[in-house]
Image (cartoon, rainbow over all chains, first blue to last red; front, side, top):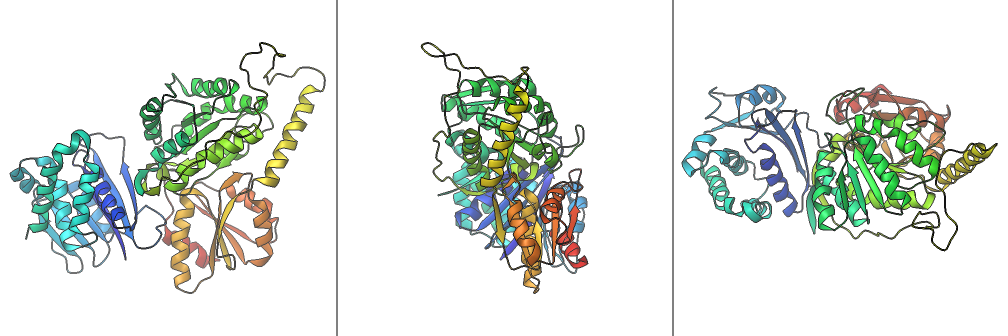
Length: 177
Length: 345
């Protein structure tokens, strides 16, 4: 098993947190995992992406050239990464911020209005977690139990109050049809 | 229990576990998480943390702390490490231990903030003035980022010469699970040179200015004898698939990409191996000399236009062809590119 995933969006959309969360869950399951962030000198509002590789053997380079999957939260990231997605790959995109209706014969494209769903839950900032939930529902790369455990491991101290919100966002992503 | 950690942070925690008593640093990407980590953790441990006014100040603070007997370190990225070269030359001349971390980024000049291996020459050939060497260690994983500071301090104290951990923006920024193994923090080497107050004994002198007739040459001969001993005793490397036809040679992040390429090639029936130097000074020349007559070719992979290849060629001494592939300016080699280069041989 080897899954190479790129998560991309605006700085501030929680791209790095999403990647770290998934990596934490993979580690909990005893899998090999690497996470590599990439951002320019930009701050909030700039582009941000991270690469997560999960495998059951040692991982060499953490840099991903042609991903197996993409979680894309905004339009500029779609334009940048979509051409690099493998044939047969999975593209999960945030249809609230990406209006393009994409259908492809050789790649699986899943539209989820992640930002709308997040807003209904009560916090627009968890759109990333909603999208991650949808991704995990399709690519069962880690179990739902592990990802909830990873949330608890990462949201500690003052951030503990965000736990319930993130749990709801994950669940909404899992359940979205 | 494993912990998910960033390379920069693992290096910081590793240094703390290794008994680092004083950290001095000035911010620069992509090593900022290290300085940030130390700013919190060193204070928690009631040790010294100073954000200096410049890189020059930081290396000279390491000089001062080392003279007084502390385990001291600084870290920076390429442009900042250039600024530290004067201090490193003085430390080598004064035979002072200490640790400098270089999280390499693209150059020359200010370059960019992407990972790079363009400072190899500077690190292993004596980046400052004078005829000296640093002991240079090259971690290849977050685990090694955690474990190598202890080795760097130990070697640095044993031989009384500054050590460098030469890493890059990719390894430093990436996260992967690591085991927080127990680190030996015992001090190495004699302490009969430290300036800790001379009440009741003869004063000691630490200096690099040796003006008396013949004194500097004698000092240089002493330094070179020491470097020879380090060359003999401290060459370190990892070798995978000794029986290979083609041996990849790479360190740090390049070695990780090589590992992936090697796996893919061998799955298709090729005989590819990987020699990963863990010290680039002293350079692991003995193993290269042993391998040279047994294999068809070496392929050196670096994130620069060809630097370590010179040391590989010196070691191989014309016995076996040595090929090169590299990317620079923040570009990172891919397994696909390496596979293409292998096919060309």
